[in-house]
Length: 108
Image 1: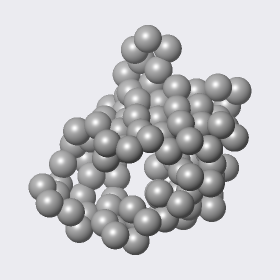
Image 2: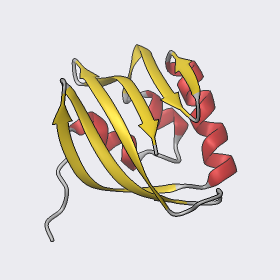
Image 3: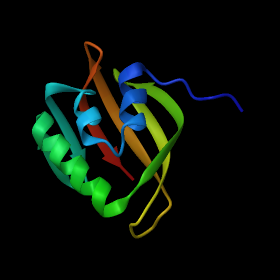
């Protein structure tokens, strides 16, 4: 099986999933992230949420497919960690802008 090739900002996002400071560098200043029924706007809000989620769930994501749809990159990943229903497959819908993540929506 060949390795999955992800666009640079998306690869950086998954590589930095337990490092909120590094994650912040993947997003535009006014990025919007939707996860767990909440919306986080701006790098500081996203960084705070990701730090809390990382500490709470210790989740690890392993992307296995990427598709394009309506100008977005949709990555499906196996996610395991300290949460009910683990492991689970999640979809990450990325919209990229100038080499950074402008929006991200994570759904089951």
